[in-house]
Length: 366
Image (cartoon, rainbow, N blue to C red; front, side, top):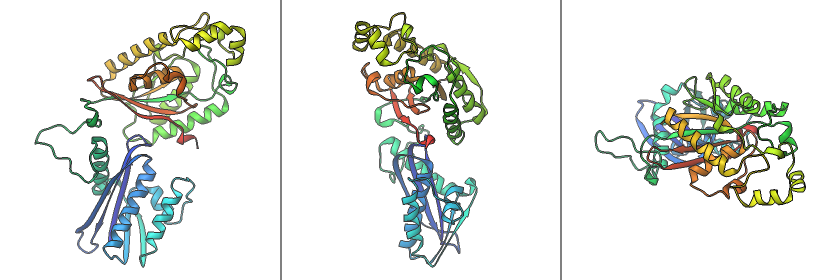
């Protein structure tokens, strides 16, 4: 029998699903189909999940010899024993697949182009559509003729095509090493910071749908421009800047640690922590940052509505965009952690709804 399998993730990691089918090798008849959604995970996990589902279905049908065909070079090479399986998330899945494969007299693994794997790919996408629509993965998406495809956030009531912001924080700087207030001070990335953004750029290069047409919008400071340029080089796009994406102006506390600022201006520091309307001496309040970033968001949507954008910025602006997506209060600024070179995703719909898809993901740095 022939097993064709595929998996996908809209975000990598993001909402994911797999599809698999079993064919009669003699006449090509489809004997079984499998599909399911997986929550939030990566493309590779989804592809292995599809492989496992296909092998299990072939076993249920009594196959003795199986030819597995996938467009995942990684899964094919690893299961064939030519590549090592290094990622910890894939190791248990690979063990399960090998255990299933051991039930057959012979299993071969063949890489095929994506165009030849369209049936499994379609099943995987149906599973992801079902997950987004809040229905079981094997429930068909039935719509009257001519009706548009369901919105990815139908269960929220959101309407229209969202503007999707892929939010990337810049890499490490000398200021972040010492955890110093780093606002408008123009500091470059460290060597580790350059390694971090190279890993992030590689991740963006592997995402479906990103290329030379994707807008990359960055804060104009050196650390964000270096980060954004690495991504632009990887996907073949170019960088634009937006002043609204600048970090908070920490005024006289620029370059100080939390402790140093608290010891220097104890009353002002306590008041700043207690009230987002209060700014540092000579600096900018979080309320002012919120208004500035909200305006920047509105301008980006007005110019690029319905598209995917890569936004490269700093901690406070990214937290603010996520806060806008969650419709949350200012306490989120103090309760949400964002790592260097982390990726977050938020979508804003034309009807005013929003959906936060991912927060502080650093899987590309491991």
